[in-house]
Length: 185
Image (tube, rainbow, N blue to C red):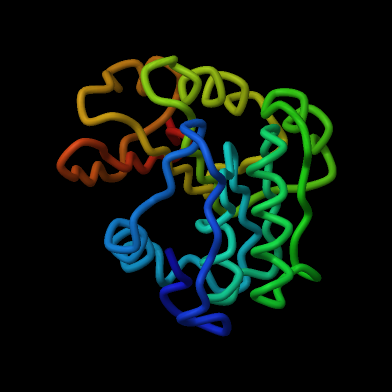
């Protein structure tokens, strides 16, 4: 696993040991950031269920102004800290060592994010719960792009009922990235 492009290009990243995280492959990460390339420079980026931190680090490497990493697994947190130090991107990062929902509440009214990325454990509907929280949150605006990674068969028919518009759905072999924004109705 490595940083694909930008200031920290080609630097290797560590992944947490164990089965609690599924690091995004370099190929999928490259596809994701090819889609996001125009959105990243100057952005405030939120990386929820951050794992190794590779997605937020890629955003920082490509010119995001700041990234907030939220993770509560101690092994993953150690990887995020180590990867931020190794890539020299720590000064642009905030690492929240908390449960995602506690962190969201603590960040409220302090930040407004341009991009929110989440890669929660699959098939637990955690992405839906985060989206429910964000519907009335000050953390996002109508322009905020929210991306979540989910298993390929995750049902997303609830998006419209929560007030979100599906922008794009990029499917891979076993998983997908879903891009949404608040609906402007």
